[in-house]
Image (cartoon, rainbow, N blue to C red; front, top):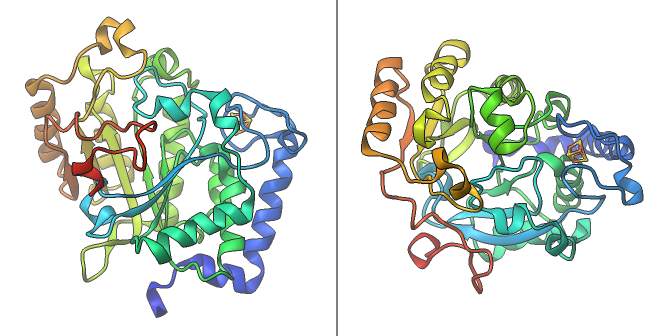
Length: 333
Ligand code: SF4
């Protein structure tokens, strides 16, 4: 695999991966894994805001064909959906697994089992990468699972697919382990982040997290087949009525991170979960809201990445109660 070998393999060989895993796991004794810093003892079964204790919760595992083309390729992205979340977005499309803590508790699994799921995605489904969705509250658990999976033969790039409410201290322990970061940049206003996601100081935390991710992996690098091997892709979900602060967030990205950063604009907003209770969030996007953001990208010179077609909302809505696969056949196949 040479130069394209994921960094976690050499970290495993040097013993550094084990050291990081132990350092992270010890922090679960007074949890400060994400910016909430609840201080609960997850090793003893206590649960903080994310309702998650020591063992990882895995709510779905599948080959995902609906991610960005450089992530899904033709064989799919090997996706592991963690249960629960450290945010509470009222419009969460994954609410069936992110905000149903009692059901999710029954989906706890031990570390060898999680390592086994990674190997299943790699060896049996032939996926291009391991895509860890909503990992912010399970950073120690995912590193421990990778530690178990390397001697079993894991060699795919690891992708950290997050809402962006991450702690820089935890991210630093992932340096060299994660190959591709896929964070959301959801808001430019702490007021809306608190109101719609119960996330205090989201803007400061998400921006600091994205800077750290960029420091670690830099701009997106594709292989000869056009698949992501390394780098940062920032996702921005346009919300109705300008609530995502698209202008401010994208300007920040272009000016303070890099105009070369890959950006994935998502237009799939749908008033899922409890969003219809909020009049400002109770509809899909207007064409004018969508084109404004597309024009903004041009003006800012953000040329790398993808813009999702307007009207994509229906096919991208997951259903985690569907037998076999959470996405509709057109996205799953
Ligand atoms: S990971 Fe969970 S318990 Fe730990 S600080 Fe965040 S929300 Fe609290």
